[in-house]
Amino acid sequence: MGQRAGGKGIIYIMTTLFSFVVVLGVLIFFHELGHFLVARLFDVGVEKFSLGFGPRLFGKKIGITDYRVSAIPLGGYVKMVGEEPDAEIDPADIPISFTHKHVFKRILIVAAGPFFNLLLAVIIFFGIFQISGVFLLKSSIGEVREGTPAHQAGLEKGDVILAIDGVDVESWADMAEIITASKGNTLAISVQRGESVFVRDIVPQVTITKNIFGEDINRYVIGITSSREVFSKDLNPLEALAESLIQTYKITELTILSIVKIIQGTVPTDTIGGPIMIAEMAGQQAREGVSNFIFFIALLSINLGILNFLPIPILDGGHLVFFFIEAAIGHPVSTKMRETAQHVGLFVLLMLMIFVFYNDITRVFFS
Image (cartoon, rainbow, N blue to C red; front, side, top):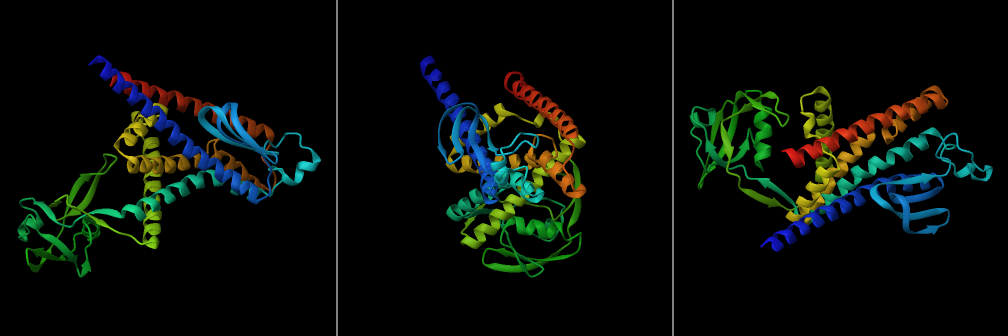
């Protein structure tokens, strides 16, 4: 019995570690691929394209580029010719030097990394929507609360909302969006009950509910809950592309809002996780199925893209700030200012890493 439990524990750990390495590898590869492709587009020489840090395990050199896999699978990098502004460069390499390219080309090269993380999410969502379509909640009623506008209008469990004010309702989300946007104005709601269809005029009432951040918000409702019935809707390639862009935009918006809420103190900082939390979640999603695992990669890719756009020195966003300043003032920021900012950025990242590791350890061993 103990051996069986131990075997399951080993499988659990191996699945978690393998999933973590796969997730990290995919995210880093796409991020660095963005930098690499745009650098080559603008004829910047690339000396190294590495997955991982530390000693080189294996790889292949093509032209001047060493494509390698390194020993520590916790990152990756693209090393370009003339990447450091103060580095000595062979005069023959100036035409392919990153530093000697126009500032707007450098901006695009740096921005390409996090942008490719967002692009990866779009590609993943597109594949999911093409294969599986989208799953939507039916606009059928599971419960009618007493004393609410829907109850007073005679709506019942099992009724299906077909249209509101002449606008067809395809899903529960469509219906909720129209009711929320009503601002309390009377709505003509078409309802199907069995074989019959009828219309009821209903005035939504405002109620205080909690949003995903635990904040009180005012919301217009009619007093019904979903039956939780789901249907699948097939999408053609254009619809799948549109849906994947919408999904990526919504998650991006939510990610940015979450960061703002954390800074404001609305969201507890103990919700922030690090590598251990990511590894646990990756393993859990892998055990629940391939589609869940791939969807998780898309979510994490968006998060990585947004975090890299933050204006923290040593992140892509910090470099972009310096390049935008250079574009505005007409010359590069001084070496002293860059070095000071790099030290500050490194300190901030080290503090953040310590904090997320503390959260991870507290969550694993003391929760």
